[in-house]
Length: 116
Image (cartoon, rainbow, N blue to C red; front, side):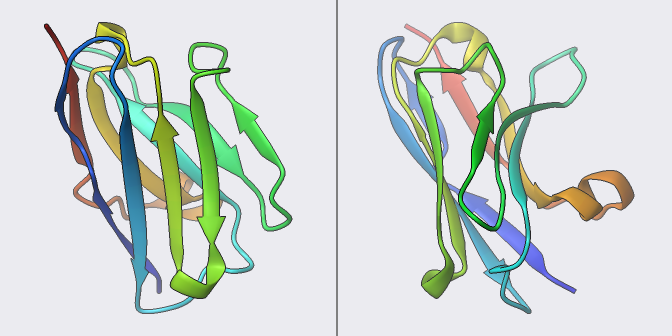
């Protein structure tokens, strides 16, 4: 199995930036499509950004133009660069494979809070 540890979250002001990291443990994920998911208070978990094994990316409309997902397979790490952050971006952010997004498990996630 492959497990992921998310990091890089924190408290930022509106308009600020954060870079989230998702480090794999137990395996490599070169072949896996990966997604960054987020769950805001009182809301369902949603897919924010997705990258397949070939590097093709897809973004939720709410984050297009502001977030960039990337991966460094040599480091078994996927990143989410978040710019121009808005209060509505406040959520716990998780990374996962397509398969585990359906079956579990989920990691701890990292909290992103955007507030003035």
